[in-house]
Amino acid sequence: MTIFATARPAAPNTPLECRDAFERGELDRLELWRRFAERHRVIAEHAPALADTQIAALVIEPSGLSATLQNGLSFALDPDALREAPNVILSQGGYETFELALISRLARGAEIVFDIGANIGWYSLHIAQQEPQARVYAFEPVPATHERLLVNISRNVSGNRVTPVRDGLTDAPGAFDMFVPATSGSPAASLNELHPGEGSRRVSCQFTTLDQFVDDNAVDRLDFLKCDVEGAELRVLKGGLKSIDRFRPAVVIELLRKWSAAFGYHPNDVLDLFAAMGYLCYGVSDGALTKIERVTDDTRETNYVFLDPARHPPVNAILADC
Image (cartoon, rainbow, N blue to C red):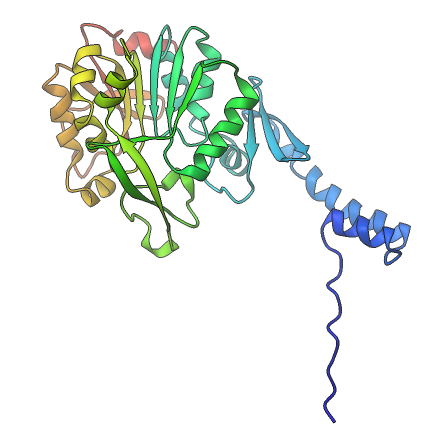
């Protein structure tokens, strides 16, 4: 005779499961209270970690978690998005604080801003808050990330002050695959497989060029440009040389030797491109800007500022306001 064991239902675990179990008579009231108290204690443990950070409050909403910053901006918080700004602030106490101050200074007075690789809108929304006269174009091609960008825009600004753009920017228009690593997540999404050990998700995305976007949208100026596209920076710049040379924006760009190598170039190729237009290059590190003539194996900086000395303030004036 074969005896089939009946699987016991899993014990209620989430708050909603515990509440439902109570309503079905499977949990008594005291046990329900105890289980909720366990979860409340975990939530309360976050409170001391907020002290002296950019986050003023964590908010539990029916739609999920959000983080309200000290400056009033609000960002949806995905606990699994380990490298996104709200989670990094909670785990490490801050997120790119000098970079944010620097970008805020460089974008001062800007009317048109391009945030290329906008991700969830961290920099786009800070600029929009600080510069109400500015129109910020936030380029984010990965569909799931773009949807989260839309959520954050709707939480913080109205009208077209931040214009989300579903196209990414590169050196040719078309549909290309992006690789979104499982652990590093959307901030590490790239046109190349840069994290093969993580089991990246491959996503088809639409792209255009910076010059084509400018022409198609009758953009008549560009004051500040931030570009962080995980190795494909040279491609973005090659697709926008006409506009960059015409408008002379201040530029902040990430350049990692290991990522650029995966795309077949060296950061010095970017320095040469800007030098040909009369720009100077500065490396960003430890609250300072250091003039960079060449990137070598000893160069520690991975974020760079490119300035036209005929148009932009001197470095000491920029740093004085950061």
